[in-house]
Length: 122
Image (cartoon, rainbow, N blue to C red; front, side, top):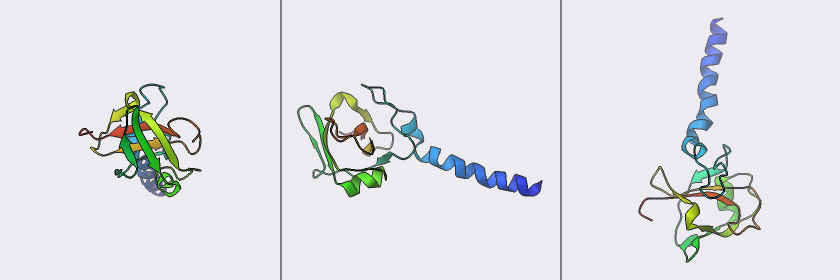
């Protein structure tokens, strides 16, 4: 019985770890389309620079290489080059940029970005 209790005690934190890593993303959805932001492996904080994000008239133009997209979502199949309209941008809870991306579907205007979180100073 002690072995079973010990195994259960070890398993609980392992099961909870992914939820904690994506906890605040999991509670969010796209404000325009209502899509849930996180499936457990498709969102991450990112360091964006003028090389890969630019504020334009219609929204933020995001450009990420395939390697950069795979750092966010390991199942990514293509780079990102698209616009996320301003009405879809949400405040980040960590004061840094964060992004959620689909593994494919790069043919859309947003190029597979389904949630974008901006720091408050943006």
